[in-house]
Image 1: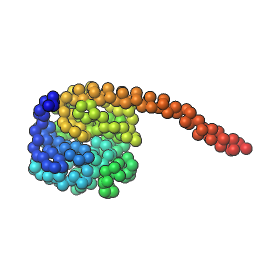
Image 2: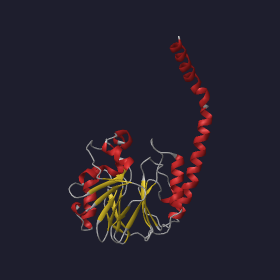
Image 3: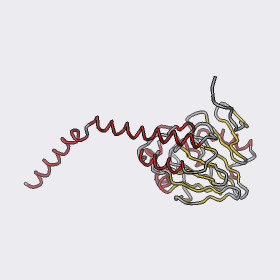
Image 4: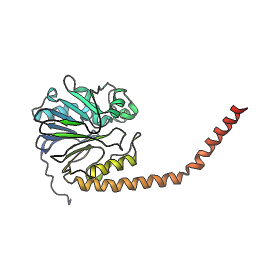
Length: 270
């Protein structure tokens, strides 16, 4: 028997691919059961946004969840992309017309240039279609929905381009792959850094957050415990990486390369 207490977050709709879960008043998680990241709908008094949208192949199921809430794609004023990985952004090209697409400037650059390696296109087998970014976000930007005020936080580590969104008044932390329930880390990809990850987690630790809305997995009402565990794990990962580098003995591995460079320089001098 599990010791975990029953979830305080009601499931409104569930099928073989996804579940629609209410995180708070006018805030909903669309949790996909395949490899796609979670998508979030925030219905503000002035405007409605989505934070991440999942894989393109899941778009019909995303529509089903939106329809349950009485929302049409044209009702979405903005889609905010947490970073460049296609499990988070693959369906973004379906949102055309008046919907604004926003991402951090580093993610926007990769997405606009269609950097398939950074976006993990082969991993997710997504169609190679353009996703246009209308607004390039920076640390400190504010997304004002009327009854929600989401502060943009630059939280690199998983990649160089990750952002989190935080509503200070309501304690809502949309942390994407920077922090997940139970202190799970989202991994460190090519442009990411364990050291940056730790710094980002330390920033999240200082927030008065009440609900964690992450890129994968369940909603969490224990974000302070989650971030504490994640910081411990990230320090352990940093230590393990240092030991790996010591075991590889980088100096001896690079000595033949350096000798080759010295030999080439001698040829240039002759």
